[in-house]
Image (cartoon, rainbow, N blue to C red; front, side, top):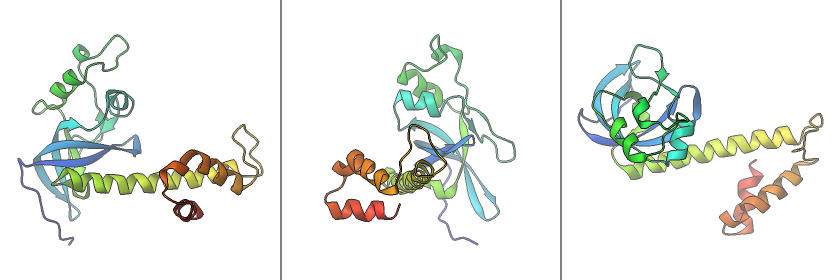
Length: 189
């Protein structure tokens, strides 16, 4: 059995959630523990969302109308806000109304595996950033592989992998302290 310190019911904590229809998009939240259940030796937490640590545009695109698990045994269902907080285009326009609705008791309890629940925001952000870096690197490798294929002739075509690295250098070199650190990162891609 995996040795995990359980966070008690009622505790305020932070978590990373993903929708079932877009699992590569991570959403950091502040939440409270409502219930705990063991599933195959891995604790699952039912959490009540208090705050979503993102802006309204991100929430509209990747949070509302996405599928999440609300119950331990049932399939996922859509996150549907009430019509009263949506504008004419069925989008959120006011973060205050959204936070009032999302934090309402018994409205939006989501199931989260214990490995994505953290006692502090710093712990959560550390893991969030590690996962984001992994996903970004994975997708950059895929983009490089596709754009440098001989058979691909679209407008993003790169004749050689070195052209891709040059394009990445133009885009991201300001994020690296030295030429060596850039080279070290992109040599792995």
